[in-house]
Length: 175
Image (cartoon, rainbow, N blue to C red):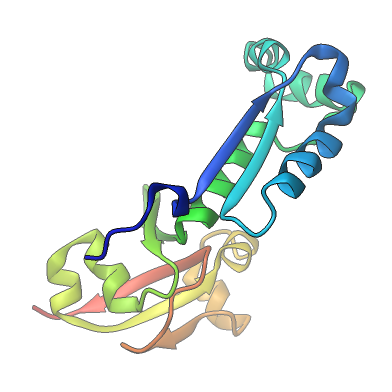
């Protein structure tokens, strides 16, 4: 493994702003992004005081309050998580069973067998193929593989398939 200068590492800047600046969130983020242009830097600006208040509210009330203040609908925490994943070259794929839907993290560019290995090494070793659907298609089909097949949204992919962010995978294997 090669060593890098610490200044070459990706950086996530979370900027705490005052209540007076909340209307300028996008502008402040753009200022910081411009200051570090060309580097692996992502910026998320937030007013920690207001975010703490929003965290205490019911989700519907928080959404209304956020809109009244002119804040983005997506919370800064969510934006920071997405930015961190992007900076680190990560993505998520999903598995869905009868009683559980679970997200798994893999590097961008991971193949289906590598993704299967994140679940269990036996799945990677005995990988045959994966049934794949996009998460939106999966939600639209109400989690039914039969509905996905009927709509032509369920694909069968082999060992060379590069997993995409938000794929729902059903791993077929034999060990």
